[in-house]
Length: 399
Length: 65
Ligand code: HEM
Ligand code: SF4
Image (tube, rainbow over all chains, first blue to last red; front, side):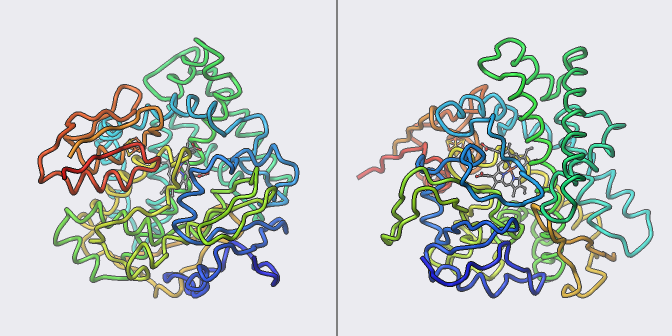
């Protein structure tokens, strides 16, 4: 382990559309001490093979909130840490499977026409509006929020109210603690009302389904767990996907030769989505925080000590021993088992949905607006700061 | 090539179903089901890609000698 002063994490994004220089040297050390926005120290595990193995290692617990000595992400916001929820196996797997049944390939494919309908509606409005336009506010954020609200049965009239509360919830340092707290309690009240409404008038949506399961058997899903899952889905399914749409579209538009390649052969869309998932990792590994229950030896013999808070580095998508020529965006990359959706038992429950939304987006925008370009030089794009996930605040586009 | 999968460790990523459609499917809860235990040779590469991509190593293959 390094004896030097811990480096600040998340790492700064300079320049905005390239991988930061700092990432190139990360893997020289298997474990890097980093300082989180809270001021607490965590250990970033940097090499792909180690990260992948640790995602499935039961000596790492996801119940960080149950360990008072674990590092906090933010002094203002406890984020997803909830000591009342047990996120470790074996209990957790059964609980998760109640939710993931909504995300089978068949169910995701049956949602695809609905996602196209929403995308087409947003593209109609974009095409009819003034130029240049901001792709982030006109498309990247509205698409996933409408998809997740559809999936969970959130009525259209509640959507805007809901968006404000989620944005507050995702702040790490951007908002003062009181404001984060008021968003958190507002969201919690709203979800209680939503669940009551679904209990009274069940529909075909996922919330109604989870309410039914919970009402039938509290051992499978308690009332508390029910609310926790609805909240997790709303939050995990929204800002992540919105950010990935905004940043990856900017990355593509900044490289017009790749846009042309995709336009000439739309069968490249799925592998392009995958490659941009690998390349653009939202700027941080904060989502995969764990607590070491025991000493854990890594592949080279170095040790993660018991009691340490560990971050599993998504920057390891740039590990040259696994991804040849990692700094090049290769939309035809054959073997692309990136870690942007995690791995092991917490593998992103919504990965298939996110992939589908991104596929619809690339194909939709690049065929509907074939001359789409960035309206400002890529170097002028600005990353948001002080949030859980830091995408571009605006992506001005022309067509 | 012979394929076997462990439903009890599957986390419903759906990845294998997308990578090798006629070989893998999912039950009502989304857990993996192998529908073609001995796939034709032209499918082997996509099956191997599914195995390598599975986030929980829930798929096992036995290659022919
Ligand atoms: C591009 C978009 C997305 C990215 C990059 C992403 C990334 C991730 C990552 C890295 C994890 C693992 C966290 C950990 O290991 O602790 C995760 C978990 C999760 N994601 Fe996603 N996600 C995305 C979209 C979605 C969507 C659309 C949904 C749902 C509608 C979703 C729902 C979840 C849930 C419920 C979990 C928790 C799973 C568990 O702990 O077992 N995500 N996501
Ligand atoms: S890839 Fe693995 S975890 Fe995903 S559905 Fe198939 S068997 Fe299950």
